[in-house]
Every structure is written in structure tokens, then in C-alpha cells.
Length: 388
Image 1 (spheres, one colour):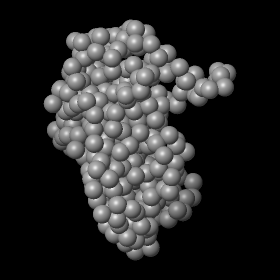
Image 2 (cartoon, helix red, strand yellow):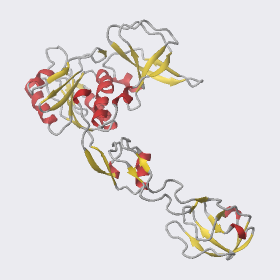
Image 3 (tube, helix red, strand yellow):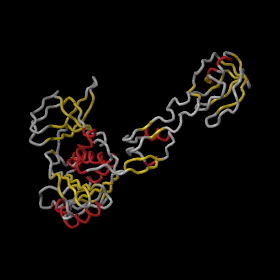
Image 4 (cartoon, helix red, strand yellow):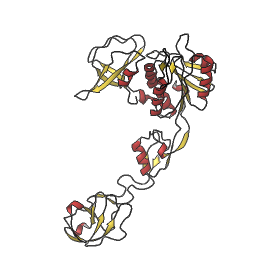
């Protein structure tokens, strides 16, 4: 799958719209931060050589509005947290330690440099603050703003269209027929795409009709970097998704996978773009989204996709039976015991249609093909699901 994916182009993004984006250029500090020596406390700026003793209050330095004069011998300047240190002053006495009598204050012994943030103590001009390839979270956005960056160069966010089909599906909020269920898969996949840095586009659910699915797929591929098709990919009489895409010139690179749940997953390229087919059962679709869709999005963002499917090791808290010929991803709950070690417990019911079980899970246990039965205490591979 990854062999068919290339990083997307660079674009300029306003900082307020850059959450989750991947930098394509370093962000470099244009000036020192802070750009002046500043007080770390509310109090009085003084010359330490004049302390202890009585000093004359000669002015004020406030945040955003400094004291224009010089703090000469015998003077003190009222100062706020973050305000610039007046010339001549070398210490700040906190207001709790000062006794004021009109325009005079009585101060204890002051230590040079006390309660002062030196110029550039956060970062200096020319420092690389955020490197190419960094995903911009809230803290990174704050740092970029502190550097004065109004916009950043970032990888264009992947546009992913989502198409589901089936006569049994109706939109949430509508009145289902006696044999229908609410469409849930497209909402889950769309949410994951957005959390992984993509822009989802949920298409209307199509009926079990090859022509209708083909037309919707062609429309979905227009302006998208990837089309995700949910359901209709197995071998039943009403599985029309793959034949519909074949009408659009789809060439399969992956016809199915030896994974449980998710065997019907497929991937290919059409003249209109890339297509990933996920199983119709919600749990199967979510498992395969974690294993395949997320790495594809990471590759489009120009990042190494291996980090998002890296396994942890955890101690099994209940016995598991021997596995069959397909790699099995078991929905589970990952915890930390009193000694700080990771432990994991599989949910009893692994039916691939159960969304409630997935909502309670925060990890997948990976069982290799034909793995032997496991006893309590065995160490197993676990894929955490932080983004679910």
C-alpha cells in the first residue's frame, strides 16, 4: 500500500489553522525571548548595593510600558511581572517583603539577579525552535506564536472521501425500517481521519447498486487524495463496492489481508486516485483503519508511518486460546499495575459488529498466525489506541 503513496505538496497555513499540521520548514526565532531583562515577580526594582534600607519610589515599569528613566542610587521602581527591568536596577524585591510609607519603601537585603528573567532566557534569535517534520500541537503553536510566526509552511492536509453502501443503512436521526440499522462506520472513520491530520468528506450512503456506487466513488475521488470505501467488499450477492470501482479502472495492489478481523480489506489505484476498501462491520473497519489507513495518512504527510503501528509489550491478565491462521488483533484494555508495569486484558466478546466493545478498548493485542494458547502472565504485543 505504502509503495503507491507520496508525500503531499507544501502550503502556507495561518497559525490559527495549523493545529495537527506537519512542518515542511524550520521555525527560527527572529529575536530573543524575552527581548529584554524582565521581572519574574510583582514588586520593586532596586539597586542591590542600596539595600537594606529606605528608598524613594521614583516611578513604575508595567508590562508593555517600561520606565523610561534610570534607577539611580537611592531609588526604587514599582514593577509588574513581565515588565522590563529599568536601567540601573539589578534586583527585584517582592512586594510581600516591602513596607511602604507614602513615596518611600523599606526593603531588606537584595541579591543581584534575584527575581529577574534575563534577556533570551527562553530562546535566542536564530535558534531553531521547531524542526521540519514536527506535528504542530497546542504547545508547538504557542512556541511558533512566541517566535512571531503568523503562518507556517506545512504539508497539505490529506483530503479523504468516505463512501459506505448498503440497503440496510440509514442516517442517524432518520426513521429506520424494520430491517435497517444506523450508519455508524462513516462517522467513526471520519473522526479518526480528522484526529490523524486529514480532512474527511463523508459522502451520502449509497444503496446496493453497482452503478450508483461507481458514480458516487468517481465523485468522491474528484478533489480527494484517497477514497475509503466501507463495506461491500466481501463475496456476498450484495457486495458491489469492488465491482463498482473496477468500472472506474481500479487496479488492485492488495486483494485481501490475512488479518482478523478485516480479511476483506483491499487497496488499489484507479485513474481517478487511490482507494482503500474497509470491511463493513464497524469493529473490523476500525481495526483496519488503525493498521492501514493511519499509516497511509502519515505517509501522505511525509512522516515515517512505522511509529503509529509500533507495538508495546504487556503482561496478559487472562488466558487466551490458540490462534488460527490469520494474524488476530484482539480488542483489549491496557492498564498499569502498582509496580508500573503494563498489563492487558482482552474483552470476552470479540464479535466484529460490536462498537460498544471498541469504545471500551484502548489497545489491540496482536496474536501471530497459529500462535499457541497463552496463559496468565504471558508477555504479548500490544498496539495502543491513543487516537480512538
